[in-house]
Image 1: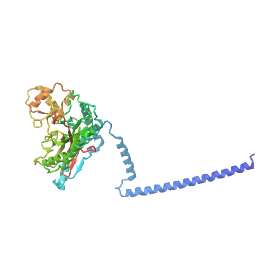
Image 2: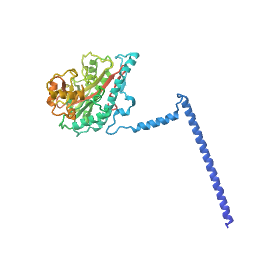
Image 3: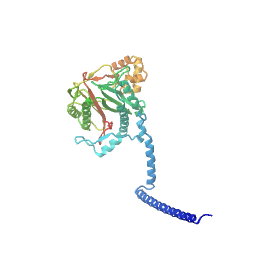
Image 4: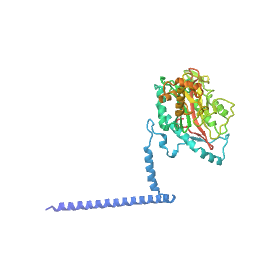
Length: 440
């Protein structure tokens, strides 16, 4: 039998334990009441939100749906290197707009009725340009990290074209590359892309112009930038970038093309660059220019000068332009260089009867028409189609005026050239720099 003192101690311990349990229950009850109050307040807030919504729509359910949609959207991310077509990221072909700028006081503003009418007519075309522009942006953003000294020019071009084909989701003539990748170096300003066997290597002291295009249904985005690793070239690049933006700012409906050249030249010539202790004025390349763009036609007839000009031709509503400028430390004039790589079907003879005796030349022309139509192409692309021994045939087609060759264009040896370019849409209500990105 237990001792009386022990029994008393047990009784006291039991009473203390029961008191502790009561306090816990009371605290738990208070917490539950507080949670119920918070839940009630949240319900009241949701009821208030639902009161302002259309009948049958519930905010809390919508919130859950939105969260589910966001999670699903977050799963779709671009790979590195990019491999998913840009069309996979945008539903109903609602691609991002470029930078939209209202026209200045010197340009004609159409009335609202006219704007609504033409906007509907053009909207499908604008979306093709925007898809091509988004493919261009994602490609060049990757390439700006990829391009490094030590790579061959063929490696650079093949990487860029491979990525670009994936981004645009290449589909024969419905979507693809608009022209060969230009990677002109130093004094060469334009139209250089390596042919097979070219072992040129990019170096730290090179100035490289990367000029490439994409298209959807023949709606071409033409856009270019300059790569230089040595910071001594920074003023040259800044001058040309500033000049291109000046050209874009000046452009608009009813603007005379000569006005743009005047503004571009004034901007570019306000810069100079010091290279190896010598100061060079930066000049625009007088015989290179911007241009309007047609369907499957990179140069559609109008040119945008980058030097002072009396050109009175005006820009018109609905037109598309490539505003590009070239700056140089040389004489400001380019001439044809050797080893042509760029070619393009003659737009004027395309689709007309062909009067050429050589059957092999005819067959090559058929290959060109079937794969490139009136878009520019290069010898590497014929190699890619497994064409063999075609150089004499290509020359024959050029001599008959069916195809045109576009050789590299170079200033004097020892000088440096830079290029920046954007595509702009002259929409009725504003101009859209459709190729604009965070990079330039």
